Length: 249
Image (cartoon, rainbow, N blue to C red; front, side, top):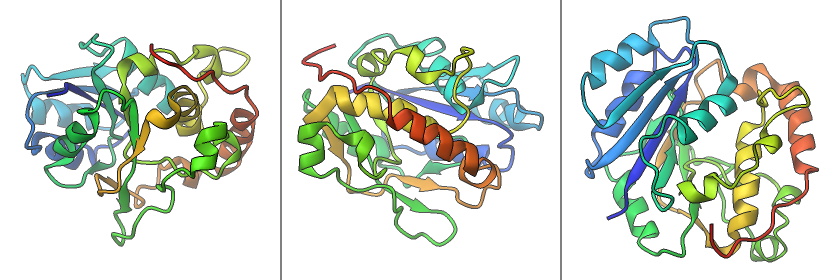
């Protein structure tokens, strides 16, 4: 069986983090690691986490001394705070205000990653408010994969995203920061996902089963509070040079 590390970054998610963690604890596969990264929250989110996970050795709790933003928080949680170093291990993205859809998420992903030629997965999710299918989770057309033209194609590789740790470690940090060395504060999913798609090519797999509940009711979502900045950074990221296709990491 594959080993999974669930990375949960959050900021001021006091209202939702409990539901998120309960969805992790309720998985049928219980052999996992989980890094919970609090990005200098000003509410009681961290206390809620401590009360739920207690001394469970599977969980690593991190509280950033200053706010790094979603991208910096996720990047450091994955590479620095992750107790697992095996490049073949699988990292799962789970935002602290969202949650897994049912108890079989890890079991489903384990089936996909039983093929060593699977390097990453994306999809599928529903929206919390009305249980509608997520519009940004669709199979990538074959011609886009062949040309590795992901940055020119409409965004369709949303939740749930997972990838092998060795693949993630190949992302160049300079592609995640601005000219002052600060992590991008918006369009963070694009910044992380495009390089891995380009390096993976046909080794990226779409998961049709619903694995994730996206909390569109949270007023702190980037698309609600940083729409203009998000659009500007998305255009910048799409103009970056594509990564080379990898045969191995």
